[in-house]
Length: 130
Image (cartoon, rainbow, N blue to C red; front, top):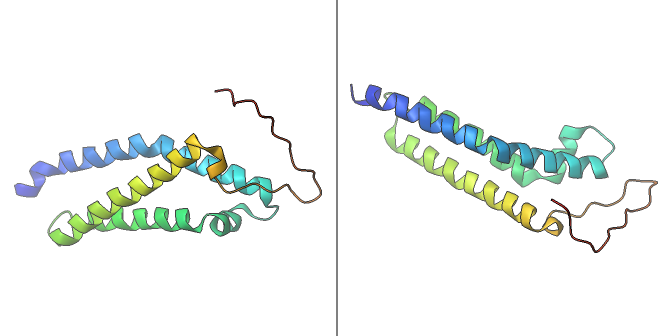
């Protein structure tokens, strides 16, 4: 009876977190794809991994920690589930901090060199419209 009572709460908390973080994930992916397409002419996935290896590693780590947490819910190793949950939260906080840095200061993102054969775009000093 002990774990069965918490199953709906556990599932709802994870679902709410995923739904809440979905816009963040979409924005991170859009930013990375836009930056990569502006500089690379080859296949997108290897270019993304080469340009943002830390983000790819963190996303793979999140998938791993969520899998470990879910696999250890029933009759699993309690301390392992606890470590996996704490690791997931820590990694998500790092990704949120990275996104906030990109959103507040566009120059914090890696610079975008011009594509081969094209002149670099000129930026005006005017503030961006939102």
